Length: 246
Image 1 (cartoon, rainbow, N blue to C red):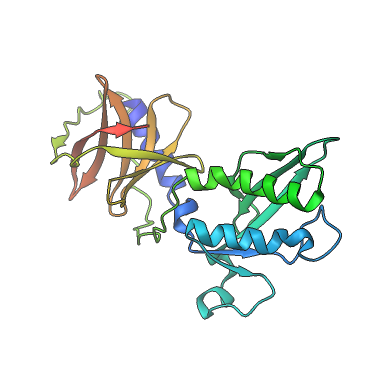
Image 2 (cartoon, rainbow, N blue to C red):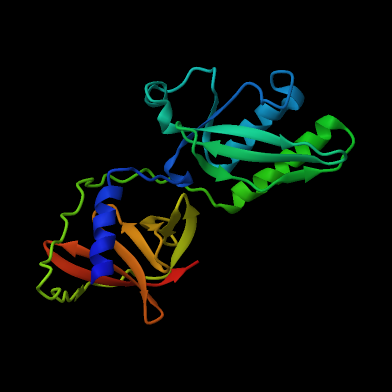
């Protein structure tokens, strides 16, 4: 009981900060040049980056181009693409970073590599290799659902009185297997549509997650080898069993 109350108090502080994942972004801004190169769009890498992003499903713009109103008015609606090079004698090594407007890394690719001697070809192949991990992330744009950001009311108990036992009502289970996709600080669960069903955020307790399904906040935890989502609905504690595939 103490752990449950502690986690809900923690969630009350946490809920005021929006958490987003790769799938919550429609737009990506690409710079005219990358820091490791001397010229704008050298070897066509910036154009190639924009093209690869569009092939993945993003709407990409060069950061100096005319932008749609929703993006021009708020650059935080977009991720920024950055490609970094790791110096190596005989191998070109490139990594793709997608950052939010505060500089937080939302996605980091694997290190793309090429041993071609021709610079233009080597950079192209290394970038293409790095982008394979973005394709494997199976990006699908999912707008952030409107949520109630009011923190949950703290539960108080008397030091002398025993903790009240809370029994959760069993809610109808979520249909089918939910697939866990890594996001910053946790996972998002999607169905086969694919549709985002639930977000889970890691805490310091193993197999416990702060959770948000867009309308209710609660906890996902493991009980008897099954995953359970517990949350309050109309003042009543509800419990849903989840079939999660990580």
